[in-house]
Amino acid sequence: MKKYDLIIAGGGAAGLSLAFYLSRSVLNKLQVLIIDKDRKDKNDRTWGFWTRHQTVFDSVIASRFSKLAFHSSHHSRIYDLQDYHYNIIRGIDFYRFIKEQLAKLTNFEFLNTTVQGIQDNPDGGLVKTTDGDFGAKWIFSSIFNESEVLRAAQSKLYLRQHFKGWFIKTRVPVFDPGVFNMFDFRTPQSGVMRFFYVIPTSASEALVEYTLFSERLLELRQYEDALRSYIGDVLKVNDYEILDEEFGIIPMTNYLFPASQGKHIVNIGSAGGSSKPSSGYTFMRIQKHVQKIVGALEAGKSPVISANSAIRYRFYDSVLLNILKNHGEMSEEIFSKMFKNNTIRQVFNFLDEEGGLKNDLKMITSLPPWPFLRSTVDLLVNQKL
Image 1 (cartoon, rainbow, N blue to C red):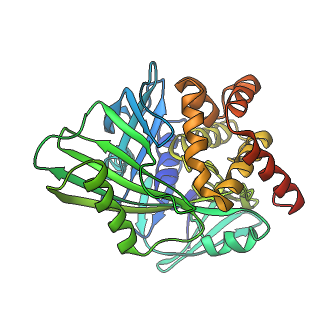
Image 2: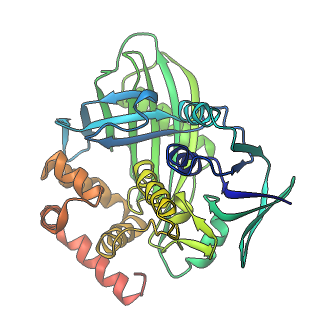
């Protein structure tokens, strides 16, 4: 059995981000093994995030927007993001960037194999794979086993944010490259929160994504029918080709993800609670979490650090998740009032959990009260908090 200082099980956003920050720290001489079954040589996903600051990934940002569009039957407006920017990073660009950085160091190794199990031992952890067993003092796992989480979260709320996206190219220019459409509710809700997300990369190319928050997934043709309908009926585009496509699922639950699986196994990514329960935003929450982990390791402290939100934000998320589960069609009005009655800074601060109690109260009082009161009572009565 080969031993390392650290093993990262899962080479996605969380695992590669952790490896990247380790490589830039005083810990960059440690022997690190990164295990993933995929080679990460395809553009399998797209990350979007807002920020007012520069990031270490600015060189691989594919698109940067200073304006945001919101459309619903209640409210439509194009917002100036002021000192914020909304950034898009393509998965393939992110993977290449991290791998190029790590290739400069001989002590970071990649192994493409399947993880069969992770075991905590008195003096470290053990990763069992189809290519053998590997040991380390610390193991960081982003492997998300939905069936295990569902068993553990039986008394909690559990929805899926699922989305199907087409990268399309139109024959004539139809998109504004300076504006991205964050929420477009101009699609039948049918009792479930459904919206479209449009990221233009030029006047004639864009990612058009159909997103739902629900317990059950759709059949493939249902996603594709909705995409065709939206592109034709709402965007008024009938002559286009599909260049590429993507599909993804993000867990949305008030289940409190454990920070570890034992003394030496640390959970990261969605498996560690980095996905925002009520929105699914994950990328920047991952960056904050793994940087805390690296800081703890540098200080000689335990890297077992929770990525879960503070108690009051978990409560807010639970109340909204309960509404989305039972009355998803209300989401259009709720999000419309959120954007209509608040500034972009207030919305982003609330979603980032950084605005403070005053900002939280301003946001909460701007929304329709009765759905939230009913949801709170229901959560308390049925003990779903």
